[in-house]
Image 1: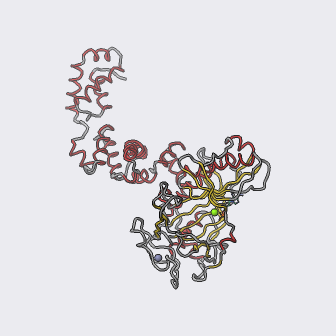
Image 2: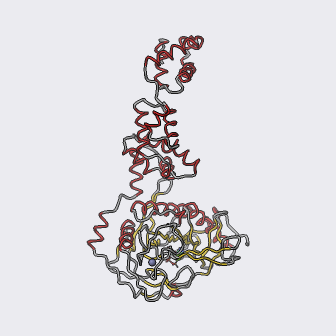
Image 3: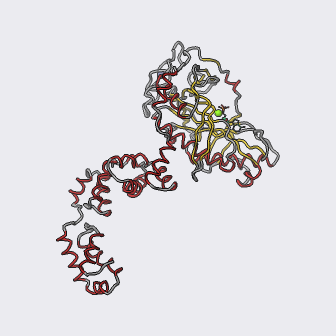
Length: 502
Ligand code: ADP
Ligand code: MG
Ligand code: ZN
């Protein structure tokens, strides 16, 4: 591989303004495919979820999936788009082995949703408006696996396997207008946009939008204009970028690469490029087709889609609160800063915390357990928080036991450990492990007397005014009670008995 020349990021931005276009494909979570009744369930035996329609056999006829159309309208509305009164599907003709019909059923000049925008919030709180060109319906292709080579690529493989289970799964493609004016923040805007879109799709309930599972994929188009110019340069299109971090890196790399080419007097060719996760670079793919190459024409086997205005308004009324608005509302309710909110978001803990609060915990306790003990545990096991065998109701119960003084933090951590180990509910773990704060004042008083007697020297110091020394006595009591005392109460008792006030 030839080494790609890059200009430093700062030098690139000093000379050029980036223009970006983001195309995001979202696989809908419908039960069946877009144009047939085949299941979309993941993990099935290859080619077990196919039929004449999604295999493109002669004589088969497609039928539009109503939930697919409904999901597309919801996405369009949430992106502030106009919804077409009438639109059609179109055939996008090209040959590819994983596309059994030799055309993809898509939409061309008549998308179901167009002309919208999505406001995204950057890390410092600034809001950037990304304008949406269109959102249209189409179908996914099958999947090729190249076998026998070292790299899993077709090059060097001895043969290829094709699985058409994915062929025909509904996709919504969301295309932005050219994003200008982001300057050096362009990569950050790209990442924030995809993140916001993902949250929105999840909130709409139309897809789980898991990028790591290919349910959401992004193509990053990028070009540069010399500073002061308003004429767009030639773009490159980096395909199938599959994580938020990669979206940001791909944009950054392309800015530096374009700048190096342009500055040395070269020209950018319009081409697709592949992104490489390992070093964040892109390499040349194929020279870009023009729309003409696809010989688009209206799909003759499907009736046009003409959503009634009543239906559109019904769907509009079901839209959830926008993720950005919800996030800001929760952040204020919880009284935390942007940075802490971002960590909660990154940990995927927002909904779990909300549910824990709904189950009765106060927000500080809910955040503390999810972002502390539970996040640590999830991390160690390489799992998501929502995959831990502990529910928001369990966490709320632990928080309640702490609030009523039955558990201190140390014991609460042991309870959580027990629940995660499958020992039962929080109450069952408390019973089985005998974890309860010693709150019997008599027993506690005796333990305190004992500690004072055994540490007469320290007790004298405290009486003499060295209150800080009380920690040693608290430690002694905690030891005799095996950690099962309320440390704050122990401290109070010691000072009381020594006749000292803090
Ligand atoms: P294609 O199917 O050829 O990729 P699309 O119109 O679907 O074309 O998508 C192109 C994307 O690139 C859109 O988001 C568009 O706004 C953006 N775009 C168009 N021209 C430029 C350019 N010169 N520089 C950067 N982005 C561009
Ligand atoms: Mg494209
Ligand atoms: Zn089918």
